[in-house]
Amino acid sequence: MSGHDAAMMRRVLNDNRGVVISAAANAPLRESLTRTIIDEIGPEDSAIAVIGDQSKVVIARAIRLPSEVVPAIHAAEMLGCDTIVVGGPVDRSATRGLFDAASEKLVVLELPGDDPSAVAAKLVDNVSAFLVAGTLRAVLVARDDLGTATVTLHLVTDDVCRAILDIEDVNIK
Image 1 (cartoon, one colour):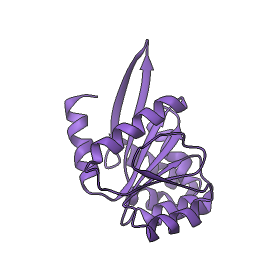
Image 2 (spheres, rainbow, N blue to C red):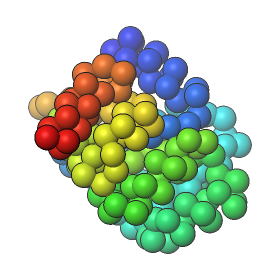
Image 3 (cartoon, rainbow, N blue to C red):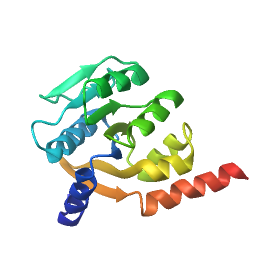
Image 4 (cartoon, rainbow, N blue to C red):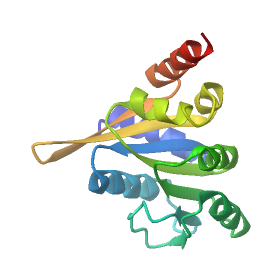
């Protein structure tokens, strides 16, 4: 990851709220990226919930909750978790619940794909583009080129957000 992208990622994570997408074409790369995001959050006393069986990410200090996303979100809130990790894809009610929780918590959503606009577009299928654009903070895309993993940060205030809003315009017509 470039130094500029790393600094911007830290700025997004320091806010401790919103949705951050961990995207890659294969599950091991997504899980590695998610672990990196969690490591960057620091400090060791933060409470993290990993929801569902889709995410195989291993986080030492995390609480693993059942697969049903909406009840698990409520359980994570009752347990005082400030970060929620969910392996996607998620259905409409689960997506809505995650975006609602992201108004106060950091939600890391693992989704397949290496095109940030296409990944964000999948969310628009479940909730409105304006909710996605307002809550989604960044899409981190990991790629493996000849054994070297690289990560690119796409801030939602930039190209991804414009793509989301363009999708909404298409849906309105």
